[in-house]
Length: 218
Image (tube, rainbow, N blue to C red; front, side, top):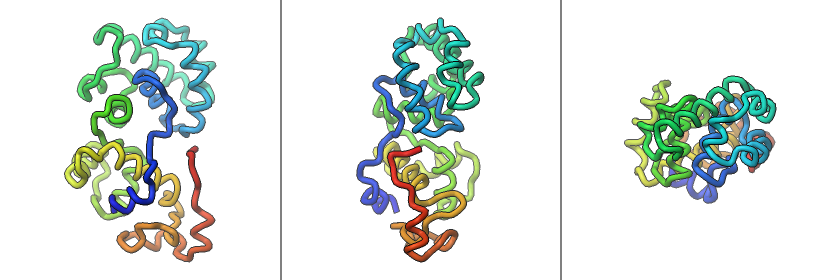
């Protein structure tokens, strides 16, 4: 199934726009309960106003909230961004750490966010177990686990470590484009012959094709 996904999505990549590890960390915090498309609309202004971690650490809370308001939960996200930046300055000399165990100590940063940053900014393999990832591995019958950490460790045993980051992108792209939560486009799914959940959505090509959502993604 991984090989088929690789053939289907040869260009799979992180759909958050960023130039530095700090920018990706901030963008990933903003992406909680928000589309990547919306985050990418907000971050150019945010990144221009706060180019360094010190800038975020000293930022005016109201100004940050105004910029990121449209991403939702803007007060909590502002707390996380400013708190994260202050912690990076205090504990890591103003440099975003490159280790999972360090990243997850930062405000607003869990394993999912940490793995996004590690895999895409630092080239350290990581599995990004978001809602799409969880839904698909259960739908594929790989596991019945619902705990993200257990899913991460289980799938990590199935997929070669060097592919963890790109596999995460393939799975997320498939979940966004074809294998939707409510009505998966089973009739056009490249994994149909291997998927035990085939039939959860329309199986005829015409109706299934109407459900396909092309990227780049929202």
